[in-house]
Length: 137
Image (tube, rainbow, N blue to C red):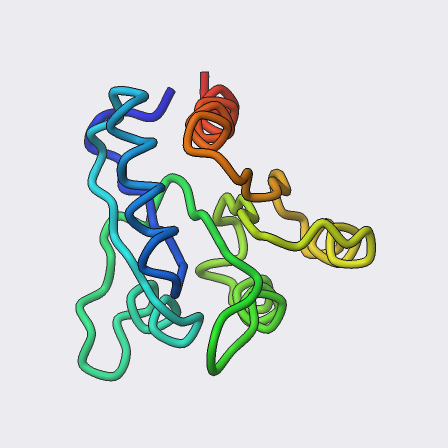
């Protein structure tokens, strides 16, 4: 389980999915700070402290990444992240609507910790979040 003061970074552009993650964390009694970036570029600025954005310190213990993002895809974000010596060890869980085997394989090429397809119901989503959090127990 994450320590209560460890930060979770959610990189997601869909407002409904953001609210669903927030609700699922609450339902799983997770009160860790949740930071939200709506694009991969915004997330990189948060992680690096660039473009006038305050740097996340310490770095997030867990990053949840959607693949279908505006301006910079999740794969482009992963490539940039893994090429950055200060950020390449971040733990990343892909949380996406894509169930395509090629997307799953491509994500694991970037050494993500897990790949979870977004469930359609809130109860399934809550169970998916519980599964994610079990990785840290």
